[in-house]
Length: 126
Image 1 (cartoon, rainbow, N blue to C red):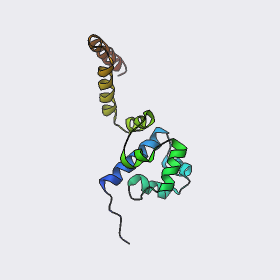
Image 2: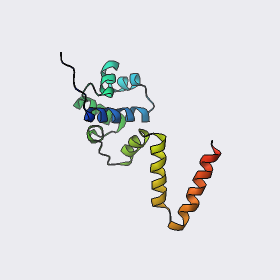
Image 3: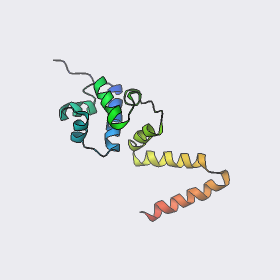
Image 4: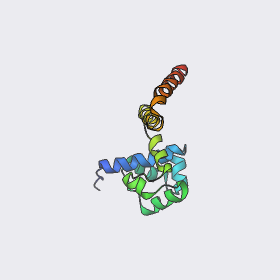
């Protein structure tokens, strides 16, 4: 039997699936239980070796309010999906996003003061 070639697309789908699982603080075993599939099947889905079926997509939507567009294509259309994307980022990526959002949200004269407060807060936590 030939092994399935894992494409970049497969890996991206697998990462989004992992983001959903991590955002719900579930192990692979618990996620497999919630989707009513064998642990090894889920493990292979999360590694990109198994495809995600329509049945799996339907269960993801029902159990976790995740759209198939998000899992399959990474299309983010609402706040819940942004949360999955954000939680799948590294801390540095998250920090960069937060700073960019703050800069866009604050008034020009207030930004410098706000960033200074954030830096002080971060330094105090170290």
